[in-house]
Amino acid sequence: MTDNNSRPQYIKKEREALIGVNAKQPQARKGMGGPRGVVTEKSDNFGAAWKQMLSYAKPQLPAIIIAMTCAVVGTIIALIGPKQIQKITDLITQGIAGTIDLDAVTATCTFLFILYGISWLMNFVQHFIMATVAPTISRRMRTDITDKTNRMPLKYFDATPFGDILSRITNDIDTIERTMNLSIAQFITSIALFVGSALMMFLTNWILAVTAIVASVLGFVFMSVIMKHSQLHFNRQQRHLGAINGHVEEIYSGHNIVKAYNYEKDSKEEFSRINRHLRDSAFKSTTLSGVMQPLMTFIGNLGFVAVFLVGALLVKNNAITYGVIIEFTIYVRLFTQPLQQLAQSFSSMQSTAAAAERVFEYLGEEELSDESAKTRSLDTVKGDVRFEHVHFGYNPDRIIINDFSVDIKAGQKVAIVGPTGAGKTTIVNLLMRFYELNSGRIYIDGVPIDELTRENIHDLFCMVLQDTWLFEGTVRENLVYSKENVTDEQLERACKAVGIHHFIHTLPHGYDTVLDDKASLSAGQKQQLTIARAMIENAPLLILDEATSSVDTRTERIIQKAMDGLTEGRTSFVIAHRLSTIKNSDLILVLKDGDIIGSGTHDELLAQGGFYADLYNSQFEQNA
Image 1 (cartoon, rainbow, N blue to C red):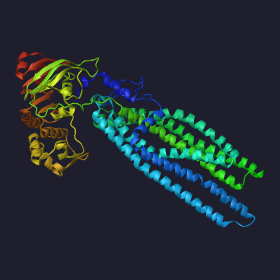
Image 2 (image 1 turned 60 degrees about the vertical axis):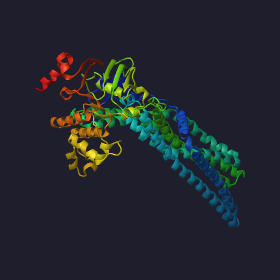
Image 3 (image 1 turned 135 degrees about the vertical axis):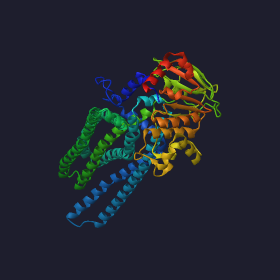
Image 4 (image 1 turned 45 degrees about the vertical axis):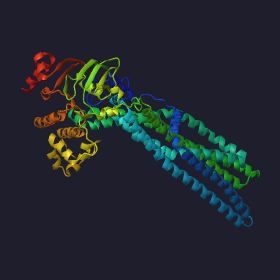
């Protein structure tokens, strides 16, 4: 809604800072959107991100603890298995020269089967719990982001690409959900398996245990070094992904403009530049994390070789039996397997830490002030509006509304005119409390609007903007929107008033036709629907921001007649560049550089001459 020229450069700077524009990149470009480039460096604090995650998941912690306990118990039970396999091996070895004790072998195998059955059951319970907990956390996170969005100030969205916000809701939360579902349990199980197998090896034979562990410790050293360097690249990867989503969303939403201005080549080059940074960060993070798994495999194989060499010497000296070597072979596999799983888990958890940092960064953004303590409200509105010494600037260092004061009586139709960037839409934004004043006050029926909740203020207004907005749903749903108990008669009356009723009946299902990508509506027809929506809302105060800019002259006359009926009896604010549409206004405010340089009726302002008269006459000459 804000005048483009009224927005200060700080918005552009915030936008560039968010996506991390490289200082060497040009600051302006032809065509759609603002510049994008290299993502700014962010904290690679892996521990802090996971601490936030665990704190956020506190309601689900009991279930997570139960799941992890089941995983650990199942792992411990599985670790008893190799000891039983050793017994079976020794029974068979001893029976080679004589008779194999099949009863003992059968009993041991039965016990082993029961152990592995219990272990499987524990792992199943763990997976079932985490498959329930992970979607619950992601659902709550998406809900919190949605609620957070409703509490965010408008200036944040003016400065932030929508695609980046969508990437946090989709890609980042999906990454978190996958890790919560799979990697955390794998991480805990791997640690339990690693520690448990090491302990069992020491209880069996300390010489072979030391041999296997020394060979495997190298894996930890290399893994810690790799993790330290790869986390930064995982953070960059998630942020570049957000930047590229923002670029794609912007280019596709403005596809017609891109085509009309032949910006395809430039947009492809810019996409390639952002994609190149994403590819580089993804390559480095994936390569570094991918080194860990083959490294752990090599260390595991090295452990096997070491155990066989030392074990052969011990068997030769009758220090151990063949069964111990078989047992140790299994324990070495169980000991090195967690290292490979830990490598995979760490890769996933690093991505999740970067994703969580972005999600919590959004959830931690500054919100609109809390208004829960406000009890004052306006239910019945007469319509008096007063601006009293209002000063405002999007940046406190640059005030664009200077000592703005005006007293508007109930039922007046007030037109706000002036050149682009004069602050016309900014005045309306302040009236709706989309932005807070630097100083001064605005009153509705003598009540300062800062003493009312924003929700109460928004209930007092219906709006029609220059940029139409329709969502995917039926015509009826788009017209009714948040209004309740709207009858078919009210719908048809509003649509007939703006001249869209006949067109709606030509649609396949009339008012129940779904408006989606297949529904072909012109810009003017979309505008007519939004005007009908405002008429159905029937709020006591009305804002029209270039409401007829997208319709033809004939339709404009129909809508103008409907607007006259709509504005009758309610205070109306009309922003218009075509001065012929506001000649019948009760009060015309002429703005220039944030100041009122003239006010009065159309005839009075023409008689005074000056800026308004020049502006009107220039339009008259152009139309002539």
